[in-house]
Image 1 (spheres, rainbow, N blue to C red):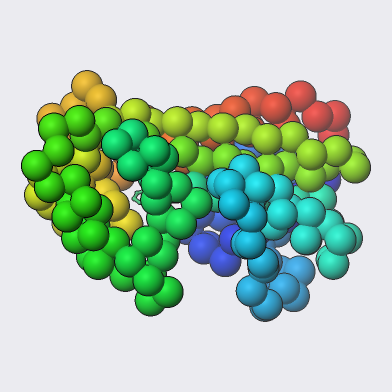
Image 2: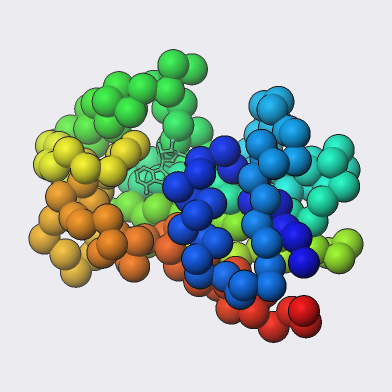
Length: 193
Ligand code: IMP
């Protein structure tokens, strides 16, 4: 069985291929000749994940899964959410995004936030979604230099380090993306060869 993972990130692809049953062969967007930008025009994280998976099915004919993630801050009613990548503008600059968020939370003590990933799977004419949440809080300044995006200012609940100070292995175990992925994997384990 073949399944497209709507990503061009080969590291992500390899990591997931290791975790899923051997009889499922994962294909990247490159593998299916998809070099265009897939539209992400929905107003929710879930909507974007579904849109990407459906786009691949409609335009390329493959069963597929796609993920979309974002950071939801309590005090900002869930912002930046689906706009996380371009919070401070279309240049998608992680530092500018963090600086803007720190500014919005200046002097605010309620700093609860969560990362959310939704994976949408388009398989045999059906769409299923798998959600992973990682709760935590926004620190008052940046700590650590590993990872990407908002990692230096997100401290997961129960830990004394930000994501950017953690070993990747630990981050993957507790992260929103890791949790959504585990749900997807246990779902596709059930599929017959
Ligand atoms: P994507 O849908 O995985 O590309 O995530 C959208 C945006 O959310 C990223 O560009 C980051 O700004 C933010 N984001 C998602 N996951 C993480 C994470 O694990 N750490 C830090 N930032 C993240």
